[in-house]
Image 1 (cartoon, rainbow, N blue to C red):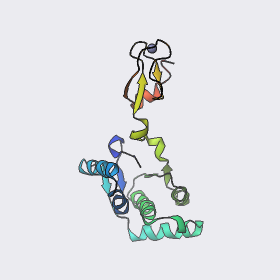
Image 2: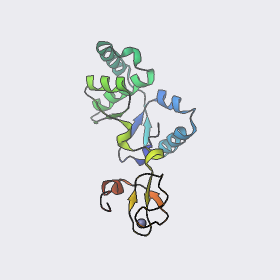
Image 3: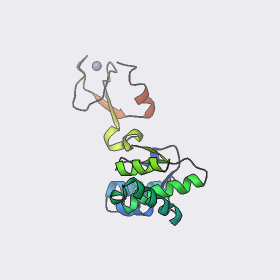
Image 4: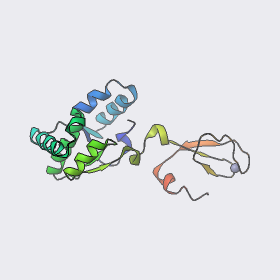
Length: 165
Ligand SMILES: [Zn+2]
C-alpha cells in the first residue's frame, strides 16, 4: 500500500502471504525486492502455535470471518517476535487486524502515520521568499508571485513546517 521499509529506521518483518499478494503489483514488489536484498525487511512464517492463538482470539472477538490468511499470519508473527523479546508494532489500516492486535496486546499503527512516499513525498516552496506550500495546486507564490519549486519532504522538514509560516 505504499509503505517503504527502506524509509524506516527499525527492523521490519512480513510474512510470505503478504509478499505473494504484492508480487502482482509492480511498485510494491519492487520496494519489497530492494528492502529484502538490503536486509531491511525480513520475511518470516509464524509458528503454528501463534497462528492457533490468533485464530482463537479472533473467534472470541468475532472477527475471524474478516481476517485473511495474510492478516492472521501477520498477527501470529507479531506474537512470535514478542516471544523473542522484541516489541513488535503491526502496521495496518484494517479494523479487524487492529481489533485482534488489541486483543492479544500487540501495538499497531495506521499506515499513514509512517508516511507514504507516493502521497507525501514533496514539499512546494518559493525560491524567492522561501514560503512553503503544502498543496501542489498552487503554481505561483501567493506572496511574491515567483514560480514555485518542489523538494523531497523529510521528517525534519515536516516537524519544522511552521518555521516559515
Ligand atoms: Zn514568494
